[in-house]
Image 1 (cartoon, rainbow, N blue to C red):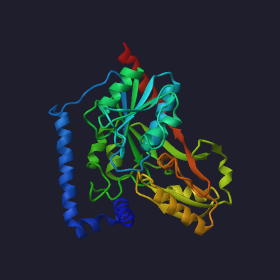
Image 2: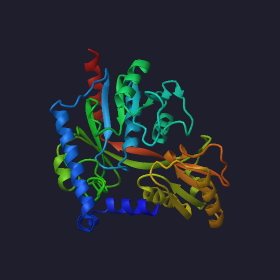
Image 3: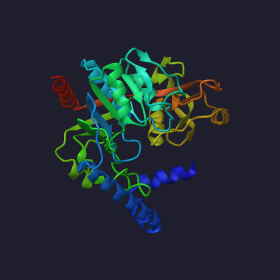
Image 4: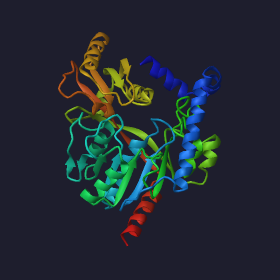
Length: 363
């Protein structure tokens, strides 16, 4: 865990860019080579050397140019809910990072309801399915196969693709770029030296910018210049309540004055811990796991022991982590996940644009 935390720290801190270039020069050379490959790959798709396939539905892609923590999944959930409420038959597709899909695809939920249990589906897909009833959620290493299944099985008119900005093999009608306004590009270097999945110039493909975080200003530097003039949606995470592993909703006031052990396996756990503290909880201990960590019985034993030593009365985690907890192993203390909603402004023109494309495709 210590190594992973150090890597994330170097990736997210712009002040450490020079140190990486000088002190880890071989890693920087690998980063340059990877960036060149990604540029060449983009050119091959533009030149039609690589094939791009289309679906019989409008595809709205939500993705980013960095690894983790830019608010993609909350954006997908919000857009899918708004589109469903507008009457469009909507489906969400994703790759299902960290989960092995047997067969061509995995249906996590149908319009009639969720059809997978925790541990039998990717955490983000399962969370999306639970938070947007009436929307089909399909997972596959091939986004095209997932999208085709959503169209053929559920009659989807709109496909919201979660985390597909670099997946150029599937044609998209609109690209929505999720950006963390508080730390847009980290140290500005391409992986493995930094958090960028591709050179930042790839952001020019975006049709819409989805800014997540508390900041209210514009984007600084080259990223801001590339995205100038693009429609902007602003989203801010808002605590809404608590939920237990059984699905029981609890009041968020329960946290005030409660001694808690908080744990999380997400890209930016510090924000989660800070939110728990702002809600009045007494944070007696915290534990960070790697992003998308699959919890084991041993992890549960460790959390039980540490909670007992710290005198905690509650174990609290994120909704994503709740979907990855082992269902059969009992915790020594009550467990709850913090439910986060979104306060969003500026999305109406984007919804209207997507719906207009649905009408165009139907005629």
